[in-house]
Length: 295
Image (cartoon, rainbow, N blue to C red; front, side):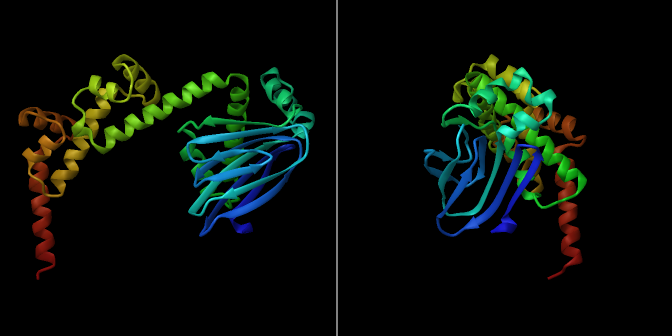
């Protein structure tokens, strides 16, 4: 089990725990915790905390636990081919010995209060932006190169800042997490079935948003307009369909274009060549493959 777990002290009193394992059946574990604040993030899989904490952690939420006393935490990890998690632990030592510029700053007053208060558990939605960051951290947890160490330290401090904001203004951060989750759902719809999106208004209504809010939030999160994202996804999908041998007219129709001329013009502008050029190139490549490997 040790090779699937890594504990690293980022700073005095600030500890990062990384876990990556496979379980064919539920696995129970008990851990002793000194007075601390723990941010627990499950990337893949799920874990149920039974005592004294009662919460269920999975890939869509985060668990925040704080206590002013030592306690034994009992938990059960569900059977899972790939269980990955990240815990950030802040002990009273960080407030005593950590960087004075950080630990003594008023921005972390909410964490100091939580660390000296009776046990408390909070469950919050998890911002989707943490998924790739934390996944990469766990996948490379045994890399001792300077860059990997710096990345673990950087992400730990990002989680620490997010945790401080969460304790200071949870309602705002929960609203942001829900907004990001909604935008992630919109993005999946755009990339998986762009031809089914009839208009930005329809896409917004489907996701419980106004068109103006969707346009504003999408631009802020992804750096391009939602209309541009839909157009790009349609053309990229059409390109793949034509490369697979589908007729140009059918690829155009399946990706939401009503007129072949507008599809061809948009395709040429985006890729620098026409759908017919792609079709001819694909046909030549196929004939070359047949000539090289005769039956």
